[in-house]
Length: 162
Image 1: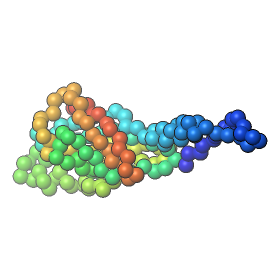
Image 2: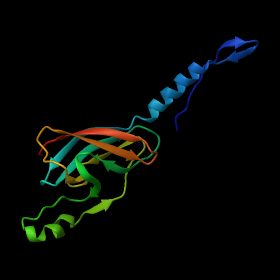
Image 3: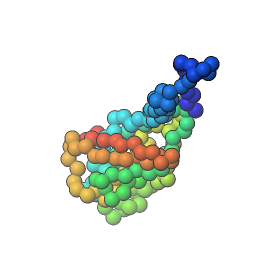
Image 4: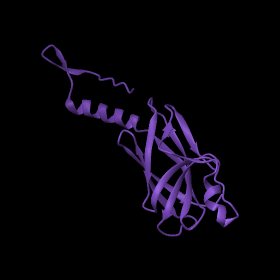
C-alpha cells in the first residue's frame, strides 16, 4: 500500500486550502512509485529455427505480489511460461517425449512483494514458439509482460547464446 501525504498551504477564511494541481502531482508521484516493477538482463537463446528461450530477472519493489498472466512478442506466434530443465534429445524420433520430460507449463508467474524472480537456464523460462523469422546474434526482441491488474511492462531481450 502506498501512503500519500498532502501538505496544506494557504488559507481561505480560516480554513487551509489545497490546490488541485498539488493533489494531482502527489497522486502521479504515488502512481510512479507503484509502477517500479522492472525487468533486467533479458536475453534470448535460440534453440531451433522455430523456438527460443527467454531469461531475465524481474524486480518488484512494491508492497504487492505481482502476477504476470501472459507474455506477447511480435517475434513469435506465442510465448509460453515454463518451469524445468531444457533438455533436448540427440534422437530426433524421441524429441517430443524428452523435451517435455521434467518440465511443465505455467499459467502465470508471481513476483513476491519487495522481491525478485529469476528466469534462468534450468529453471523458469519463457518459450518463444513459432518464431516468425530466424533470430540473429545481437538482435533485440520486444516482449510485453501482461500483469493481472491490466498493466503491461515492455521488455527488450537481446539474442545471444550462452
